[in-house]
Amino acid sequence: MNGELLSVLDHIEREKGIKREVLIQAVEAALISAARKVVGKKTTDDITVKINPKTGEIKILSGETEVASQEFSRIAAQTAKQVIIQKIREAERDVVFNDFQNRVGSIVSGSVHRLENGNVIVDLGKTEALLPRRELPPNDEYRQGDRIRAYVLEVKKTARGPQIILSRTHADLVRRLFELEVPEIDEGILEIKSISREPGERTKIAVYSKDERVDCVGACVGMRGSRVKEIIKELHGEKIDIVRYSDDVREYIGASLSPAKVHDMEIDKEHGKALVIVEDDQLSLSIGKKGQNVRLAAKLTGWDIDIKSKSELAKEKDVGVEELSGVGPKMKAALTEAGFATVSSIASATPETLMKVKGVGEKTAQKLLNNAKKMVEKLRWVPKAATPPRDILSERMKEVAAEEEAQSKAGKEKTEGTETS
Image (cartoon, rainbow, N blue to C red; front, side):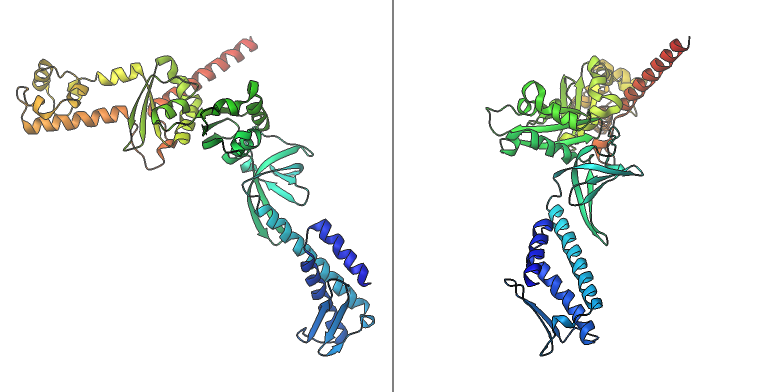
């Protein structure tokens, strides 16, 4: 019997991954419960059980008296069995919890066990995990039996055991996929600096090479795009822009707006803003569909990015001096004659220069200068809001997005009309 007990414990230890010490404690607790029924005691304070871990020999003591094993009734034996099963189940849950607690932030693989109200229950072998609907990109569709890889978001302890929450929308899923596909990242040669993602649509990832001989973008793309294609396939067609990170803000922001080409840029480091100037034919591309490209670029770089075309900027700089508060016909004529016909020309002047204009004193010069600078600032920069600036689009961005949507809708109606006719 003793040898059989040790064999059973060895088997459970190998199969369930539960330490022998924990199993022996479970058996001892079970035998104490059973012994209480045999000796008729209400408490177990005076009952002790000792199991020799080498021989499997069991000694049950009630005070100083040893309880013979043959005295155990069927009910007592059943009680011991139930306690052992319960203890082993609890120990098994602890093993699973500790295992997956250490894997939070990593990728796990499994198969789709079943679908429940849009949620996916994933079989991970030792246990099941929950992939909530909110953590699924819109382009992800699964059926029972499909293989799936997901990011371990959280592990919770519940009455039913550990609950493992998975995600397919987390930005770090893309990070882990690149670490798996690009050996240079795992080796520490390349570093992922930042990721911005709109799940199912597009991801921008900024990478940096610590070795000048290794091209960070080329390494991530792979030979003929082999590496990035595998990641795109895993993400079910989600587009990925690989951006070369740079300490030069202008260079970094310019790269983040790829595939659009930047003509010029004005940086406001104090407020963390960047005014990007592009050619007229690059405006729509730089902003992206419904502002997606510039929104992702802003999240990637951490800068509030406003985009204007060259023609828009030229119009802003040509705002007439009459637009300033307090400038009437006489003042306009005097300023224009002195060479200050636009607001931008006044904003770049000095009080001393403006005081040379007929009818302009020290206070008026300072007032004109302040008003001009405020107007230029208002024209060139997106107003700072309470919400994070990286989530805000300028009015022009919204207009472009609305125009694109209207054109798309018009084209669709035209197509439907042609098909009907």
